[in-house]
Amino acid sequence: MCLTDSVHNFRIWVNLWYLKFGYCDSGNHISRNTKIMKIEEFDVFVIGSGTAGQTVAEACIKGGLTVAMADYREFGGTCANRGCDPKKVLLAGTEVLEMAGHLEEKKVVTLPRLNWKKLQKFKKGFTNAVPVKTEDKLSKLGVKLYHQSPHFLDENTLSVEGKTVKAHKIVIATGYTPRELPFKGAEHLKTSDDFLNLKKMPKRLTFIGAGYVGMEFAHMAARAGAKVTVIDTGNRPLADFDTDLVDELTEYSKLMGIDFIFNATVNAVKKSKKKYQLNYEKNGKSERISTKLIFNTAGRVPALAELGLEKGNVAFDENGVKVNTYLQSTSNQNVYACGDVSNHSVPLTPLSGREGYVVSHNIIAGNTKKIDVPVVPSAVFTLPNLASVGYSEKQVKERYKNVVIKKESASDWFNAKRLNSPIYSYKILINERTDKIIGAHLLGPYAAETINLFAMAINNGMTTNDIQRTIFTYPSWGNDMKSMV
Ligand SMILES: Cc1cc2nc3c(=O)[nH]c(=O)nc-3n(C[C@H](O)[C@H](O)[C@H](O)COP(=O)(O)OP(=O)(O)OC[C@H]3O[C@@H](n4cnc5c(N)ncnc54)[C@H](O)[C@@H]3O)c2cc1C
Ligand SMILES: NC(=O)c1ccc[n+]([C@@H]2O[C@H](COP(=O)([O-])OP(=O)(O)OC[C@H]3O[C@@H](n4cnc5c(N)ncnc54)[C@H](O)[C@@H]3O)[C@@H](O)[C@H]2O)c1
Image (cartoon, rainbow, N blue to C red; front, side):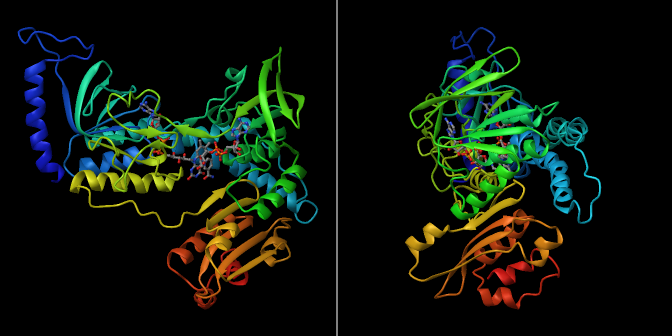
């Protein structure tokens, strides 16, 4: 049964339920003779206004359904307000410094200086307008907006802003939130939001966690003149990326003034007058460092705490809302989850959009579209970029009999030499039997761009011969793909 039929039945059911129980949000049952608080009713209620939530809301409205959306923070989600976009705007400033630094004595006489305050102002030109524009766009489409966290009252019913709201389908698109760290003094830790809004770059700062966020911010802060320490429980940064390239990036990061402390457990943070002291344990010994600010970049977890999922009969685990291949809750058929918060997702913006599209399709037309994720390129916006798509070296060795591994430093190739860039390396994995590319790992300038070509090649089953036959612009980073394969 598709939504338009079931919506009709649902509306009749809501009216009957409402007449029978006359139930208001506080949980008090009231007499049918007294004035009954009106229950609001929608076809679809979306929780979360990020990429995933907006995709669902827009498609469902355009599909003729009534839609409401709630967000307890500024509308527009993580990526546009406090993630990918503002990060990339700030990064532009440090990219200029990086490039000029490499060309010092070759072409550039005076090195530029970064004005962090101005850079922040420039960034606000992008972010300040996001919440208003998002609300405006959604309101004009006819989406009813709420500005609080809803919580489930039962499988179809939410409480939000003191109102009881019924929805035929409820979509959870609440994203991730920083992982809470358990040690004493953790309340002093700053988050990625705080870093992106820093008014002034402190002289010394520390990141707990050497993942995407910790490494990207450490690189940015080091270029902006800070002395940076990154501390991690693991034995290297960016555990999911190619070991050889990460080792190279780590060595280069050290040259940029970033100190790493690996295999360490932070056990307390103490505040003194103007600084913080971070205590940690490594190799059975207690150590400490003193720093101006400490950021929690130890990962992010599904944002589910306030939703009362038990009452809604929505199953979840540490990876998020448990969903089937239609992105529908495994325990409550009225609920879908998409974006970072679904336990199916790879927590990246393009995947959130794709999941949002699948959910809207399944709500409008019934469960007819399964989530089908092609290979996903991923990039860490350190300088140089680290980027990856397809299988890792370890995975191909487990899966394939005969694999060709092309791995080299390309720092003496024209593209790198022209920028005097010291780092440019790659590892390309090719299935020897089919000549198809099955994995690509790049470290170097613009690797976040070049990796997209490899993603296209893998998704379209291109052979190295297909790539050799393709004409690329010259000289360009894309053209280097031919030499790499
Ligand atoms: C610093 C940083 C940098 C990043 N950089 C990149 C990058 O370069 N490239 C990339 O692909 N990805 C990046 N990401 C990840 C990317 O931002 C996410 O994958 C993406 O935003 C997820 O979209 P979403 O719609 O699933 O969730 P979100 O965009 O997080 O939206 C969820 C929304 O739900 C709201 N919400 C949460 N709980 C509730 C509740 N109980 N009630 C009401 N509303 C609620 C939140 O306020 C939020 O607005 C970055 C993330 C961070 C933190
Ligand atoms: N460029 C991008 O695409 C981009 C950028 C930022 C974030 N993201 C997304 O956001 C997600 C979250 O990123 P993230 O950097 O917050 O997490 P992450 O999972 O990438 O890294 C967390 C790091 O913290 C370490 N860690 C965990 N607990 C710790 C502890 N108690 N003490 C010290 N270290 C600890 C882990 O070993 C790991 O290295 C990523 O998975 C990614 O999908 C993507």
